[in-house]
Length: 431
Image 1 (cartoon, rainbow, N blue to C red):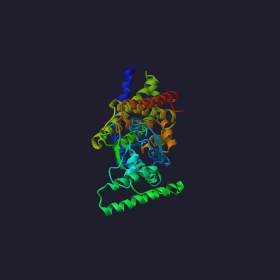
Image 2 (cartoon, one colour; image 1 turned 60 degrees about the vertical axis):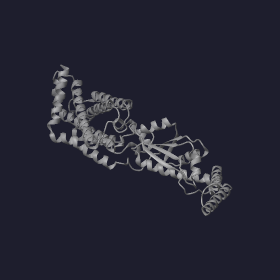
Image 3 (cartoon, rainbow, N blue to C red; image 1 turned 45 degrees about the vertical axis):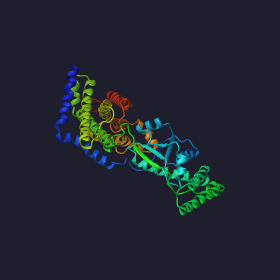
Image 4 (tube, rainbow, N blue to C red; image 1 turned 90 degrees about the vertical axis):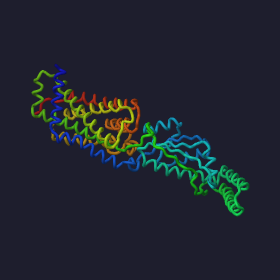
């Protein structure tokens, strides 16, 4: 009896939803259109200037005074937060979105950088493995790294022992070179002048020492996700954010419709039927969850066909996040109905609360743009977990394990919302 009644209630709600063709079209079209716009807007760049310190993992495989000075110099800038990690840990942090850039300083960097500062030859190669959704921050890290390297390497060449050793080696090689006599003499005078400058600068206070102007390294950059062969698609995040936003709006409408039914006396008449109140609320929640799941499915099918948004991670994890978020949305609608008094007064407050949830959840712009304190605060917002979970299963390409935390948090919110709604729901209009 209960199962038959539940199916009948859900079928009734679905028929009502699909009967209004204009509303159905808008439910699908609105998130698709706005997500397409945001995806296009952020294609090739992930946002604007970052307000929090950019996390940079450094892997020092050189382990020399020069490499340590380079790391210290880079860490002095207030725009980055440098952390020394092992290679495997650094790359894993980037793949999971915990670190923006991983800088690898190869063995032999110090010797190669000082050796090629004045002469030609192969330059040592620094590697930047980065999160492809942080393109703007990558450019900033690249510029800061250039400044730090130029300062440290040039100071070493003109004031440090490694620089004098490199100059001595270059002079010795010059004597055995096949250069023409005139060229050899000119280059010898240049190197001898640099050596003399090195000696004089070492006698000066550190604040009075000057450096050089040559770029001492080449740079290799590679976008890094769990599926590194697949390029980053900004539409994936845009569709996650807009899908979350408009499904929450659908949850609002589901809650408002309950208030309208209560004011009209429909819920009072339903209570007279041989149906429990839990079954009535459960049927409404289940139908709202199914509608949410259908909207998410249509939105992502469109994203797949038009913008090539793939589920690079776990398909089961993606489905789990979608189901958990749909259930959370359904109970969110019940919560609105249980706390609201009239449809008119409740609608404005519910829309405002939803916009705050969407804004803090990183649906409009990625959460890494927020200040550091706000990024931590948003971990208590269910929309943040929904967006991060969808990102993890799509463009980040992470496995099912990465979906467990978002699923658990969303189900926790769904349970909390549902219990509050069940406890506070009023079946009749208060006089």
